[in-house]
Length: 598
Image (cartoon, one colour):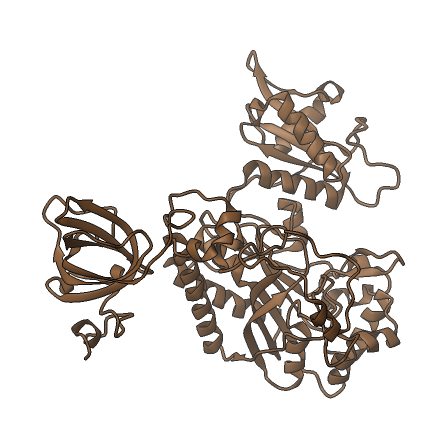
């Protein structure tokens, strides 16, 4: 027989329940209902009255029982009764359902439960190791339920946006061949081909380019990717990204596609649509914020003091003989003049640990109505330099000016990290400030053989204005690569791909990759390109990171159902574990290191 609630189409109603705890409404008052869930709390008032707070994934409702209740915390129960308004003055304003209760209840125990290792409440602080060991208990907590459901909302919005823009969802293999992206890959031994290995894909990069050659035109997938890299707040071995590629498009087209999908997801998750996403070049981001992942929620932009100290006699600020690109950069810390000497010494040591030769500091003070500088270096400055430092930095009395004089990129990077450490805020704290960073360098340093190293991957198209520099000055070549940044986290990256054999050959030559090496590493992709590759470009961004920020979390572990610890272990299952001798023999593998004891 179909119950009244189920017949009315109550969300989540099944043959075992008519309604969900958190979705009851005034229109349900007076109805006979059946709810299922976990006992959150039980309160007995003598032998003739008991209160049970029943919880499911939508919320909690108070149930009133005439008599005692044989159901303890976390028992799984079914409750039948009549929904009624609570007596006047007995409402609970802290509960979404605090205006109602279920009366005349009968409780059926569906499963008993041992006392959980920690209370299923958000306000209870539990160490992460315990939370992950009993993740199935942790996921019952309202905040974790909300996080995973928010993530599902994000996924649905992204899929809807991609479908609306004409993208086709295609799945690509998890057992794959090594890719050229540089990160360490997980290897999977082949039982049928002893001694040979698959790798788990860092991303579907080559597969999606093959799909462009195949004529799919616009592809996407919510892809599982794996990288054997050290873990941190925004990185796990396993991660999920929205991966997309399109043919016959340029950089602006891709940025438009991704912006549309990300803003749709933000609106679905938060109820508000952020403004259009701004753009800045990589060079501008480095100059102003000291990083290619600028957090635009606060000011504290870096200041260039190059002109102030252009002819200085202060050795700490003078450019070394033969320096290719020297810079004197500054960061103003509002109110930082109050910092104790011990804290300033700590900042100096931090700068040195980051690679800088040192860090100069100047407190802006005032005495007898005269603004001055308090610093061990102040006595070495000329009056012109002193006045110029204050004018260029914009510092006022009470501020602290931190100065790094070093190679340009290093000086910017060191102060950029200090900017975040001294003025930043948690990544999940609003507002949401997106920015596109474009025109990345094509190459990032050189390898031991003196060849440039790709900053993205070797299939990234150079900026059209810099093609002539590939052979003469590769370090100056910009690429058509782009990153999307949100609140100081890199969400993802992409690029316009090389589809012309002549340009690809020049890039391989610059990298020191011979034709034979290219064939061995990327032969199947190069072969496909010989059969007609359309101009194409793509992008991928981390859904874990996006969902974490929307949920207000500072680590992606809070939006992943079963994450690993910082050491890569899984406290729930005990993974990674040793394989049996028989299993290793089937794979043709012998281990030289004993499995760690846990």
